[in-house]
Length: 129
Image 1 (cartoon, rainbow, N blue to C red):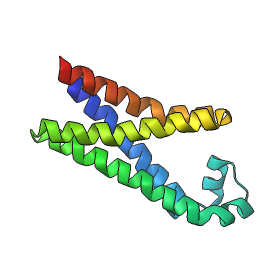
Image 2 (cartoon, one colour; image 1 turned 90 degrees about the vertical axis):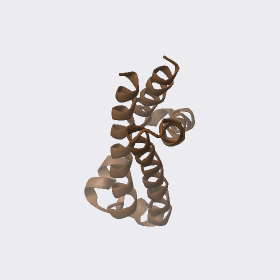
Image 3 (cartoon, rainbow, N blue to C red; image 1 turned 180 degrees about the vertical axis):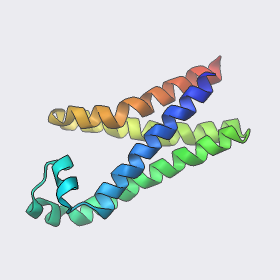
Image 4 (cartoon, rainbow, N blue to C red; image 1 turned 30 degrees about the horizontal axis):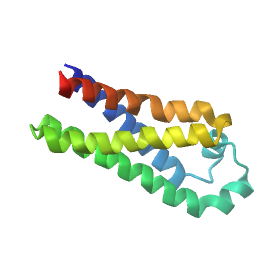
């Protein structure tokens, strides 16, 4: 049961990071995305290449996590769990870096990091049970 909870949480974390990919790589200079990230039109334009690249990091972590979920669901528990740990664990670690480096972005760090951290913990508990 705990493994199922972990996979659902990991899936939610992956979906959030697909959305972040869309914002960073596809809509970075739009007014809506600028409001989310608190950037001016000038800042968004100046940083759009960096955001584009960063968005793909988020997409790739979401893909790694999603492939892991599929593998666990298909019965390849060891390989799938390794990918979920790598993907969701990296997302949780990146959120921790954001929290430590930019305490004023605590809300964003928690939104990005709590669910994947819970997924990692639940998967660990589920596999050890």
